[in-house]
Amino acid sequence: MSSGDLTGLDDDGLADEFAADRLDDASLVEAADPAGMLRQVASSAAQVRTAVRTCSEVDLSPVTAAGRPRAIVVAGMGGSGIAGDILAALVGSAASTQIVTTHDYQLPGWVGAADLVLAVSCSGSTEETLAVTTEAARRGCQLVGVGAAGSPLEAIATQARAPFVPVASAGMPRSTLWALAIPLVVVAEQAGLIEVGADVYEQTAAKLEELAFQCRPTSESFVNPGKSLALDLMNTLPMIWGSSPLAAVAARRFAAQLNENAKYPGIPGELPEANHNQVVAFDGPFAPGAGLEASSGYPLRLVLLADPSEHPQVARRRAASAELATERGVRVTELPMTGEHPLLRFASVVPLIDYATVYLGIASGVDPTPIQVIQELKERIS
View 1 (cartoon, rainbow, N blue to C red):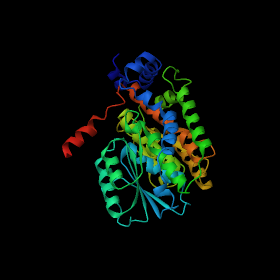
View 2: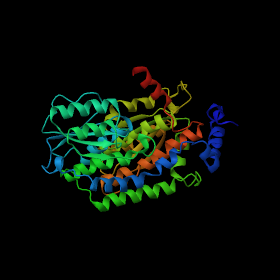
View 3: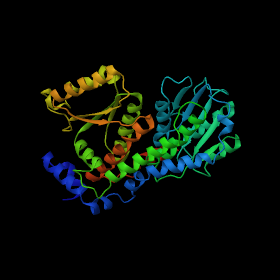
View 4: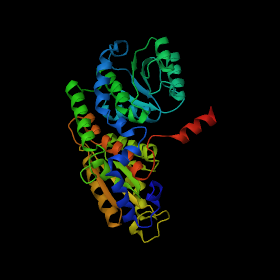
C-alpha cells in the first residue's frame, strides 16, 4: 500500500495499524524524511550547549551593564519569533520589566531609548524583523541581534554598534528553536531578569538528549513516546490547552509544529480562557459523543499540557475539562511538564511535540520538511 493510502482507509483501526507499521520500520522512516528533520530535532541538546558557549564569546555588556531596561521587545516571526514568547513565559508576569513580542513590521509606538529590542531571525533576512530592527536603531533603542552570521540582520546590528549573536541553523528555523531562544535567556539573565546558571543549561541539554534517545527512529512505537503520541493524534483534530503561560507557549508551539511538520491543523488554547469558549466544541459536530454526525470524520482530541506551577483553580479546571471531554467521547492526552526550573519544564515537553509532529507527517505519507505554500506566498508578495 502506498503512503498516500494511509489516510484514505475507511477502517480507522486498519489505518492506524498501517501507520504504526510504517513508523516501526526504520528504513521507511528514513526514506520518508529525506531532508533529515528528525536529525534536526535531535540536535536540540547541542544547540543549547553551543548557544551558551557562543553567548560567552559575545560582549553583551553594552546592553546588560546598565541593568534592567524599562521593557524588552522581541521581534521575530514563525519559528524564530516564538523565542520571544518563551522568554516572556520564562521570566513571568511578576517581573518588573515588561517583555512583549512583536510579530509585525512595526515597533509599538511607546518603544524608545529606555527599552531593549531583541531581534531574532534564523536566516537573518526575515523582512518583518529587519523592518522592526531598522526602526529600533532609528529610535535609539538598545539592541541585540540573533541570527545567521553575515546576514542583513547582522549588518544592521553592526551599523548600530549593537551586539550580535551568530546562530548556525539546524536546517529549518522551527528546528533551530534552542539556538534562537537560549541567547535571549542569557541576555535576560545578564540583565538581572531571570536566574538560570550553568547547571540549569546543562540539565536542559541533558533532558533534551534523554528524550531524543527515547524518541529515536529505531525505537518502536510502543516504547517511543514521540511515535505513540503521533499515533494518538492521527485522524483526529487536536485541541491543545496549556495550564500556565509557559504551557500555553508550548501549546502554540505544538499547533505550529503540527502545521509545518505534519501539514496538519491544531487548535491551541490556554486555561482558564479556553474554558470560556473552546470547551463548547465538546458539544459540537467534532465531538464523537455529541449525537451528531461528524462533518469531517476527524473527531476532537483534547491534549492537556500540565504545568506544576499552574494556579490551583486551573488545576481543578484542567481535571474537570478532561472529565467533560471523556464523558462526550473526546479522547484526552495529558502531557505533564516536569522540572523545578521553568526552562527544564519547557524542555520536558517540547521534544515530544517536535518528534510527534514529524512522526505524524511520516505516518501520513507527508514529507515533514518542505513548506512550499509559504514559499509560494512569499513569491506572490515580493
